[in-house]
Length: 314
Image (cartoon, rainbow, N blue to C red; front, side):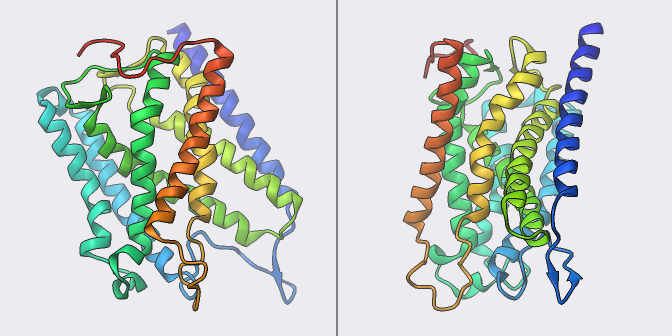
């Protein structure tokens, strides 16, 4: 009990300090003005100049609470105790399907997206899903082994595995990351559209990326802490140090996804058009930056990296 209180206190201090820092930076900003009137800024893309990005983010906004509720019920009711390897695959794959199939079967996204008039490979929603899918694959196939090695994490549920990572997790990561990057887009856009460009806004932008990355990593670790088949040798360290380690993912990917294909709705933008191959290269590039940072941390701790061999047989 004392140890749990200590961790709770440490996390409260860490998160409180981060929020205070961001609040101070916000107070220093110069609001954008139009004819001496302060512009309120916006969370979502402009419906006139960015209709494709708006429709995609609105769709993710609608579906995210749904998968969170259903996934939460699976954890809270412990129905997973009845799951087989196929059950995990069906549940996680099923939850990811609305994101994966939306560009193909529902290109308008219910919000009049111009994607409905584009070929599949040119749709913003398709490219956004490819970006997240490639990133999710890299994260599971490679980054998970840093958690195995550095934090002594382990998956022990019945599972079909690829490189000793449950295949169900590749799908779960897709719907998790789709929602995470929606939330980061909303925050970063609010900053960019609310405050005047300059060094102060840049510092705030970077600070919010750092804080939200840590917060996202911590909240995921906390919300799945009752799931017994994903465990850590030292869960308290997973909350504090592990959240910073996991947050490295998002320090790179949050701004990367925010700026990805930003000009998709610009007229006569053939020269700057982002193709499906450009999308894969972009995601792989961000993935390599993340992997390099993770390895820098591992090297600084002088911990060997083991890839493929299970930390605990399941």
